[in-house]
Image 1: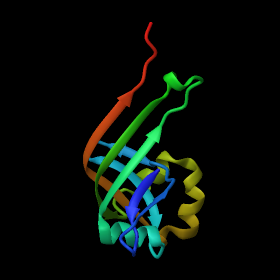
Image 2: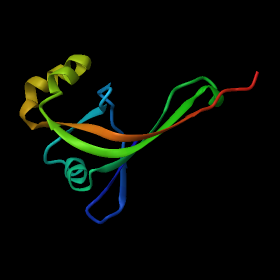
Image 3: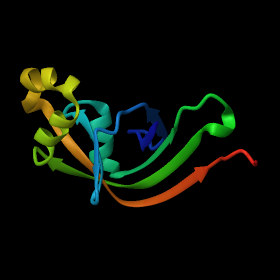
Image 4: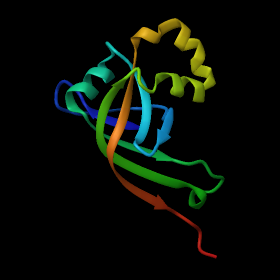
Length: 117
């Protein structure tokens, strides 16, 4: 789940896929022309939250990250599509519309819940 600020200066959330990660940050995609893209380019600051799966609530792990986004253009696009094979079809159809956004200057809070033995 990712939160950004909309045109009315209110928080708005949506679900995204983290497509790639490296030492510089986390990467995800959005299409130029979407309101999400516009919000990211004008606000540049986001909050991201997620949770892992698990059979029991105490088996799950959650993470909260906040930081700035940077448009990396097409720089990471090939690597992202190679790492996510289901995206290769989209690469052929709409490559010129996609922009890669790099999540940088990250402050990470990792909460790990483990059941006591």
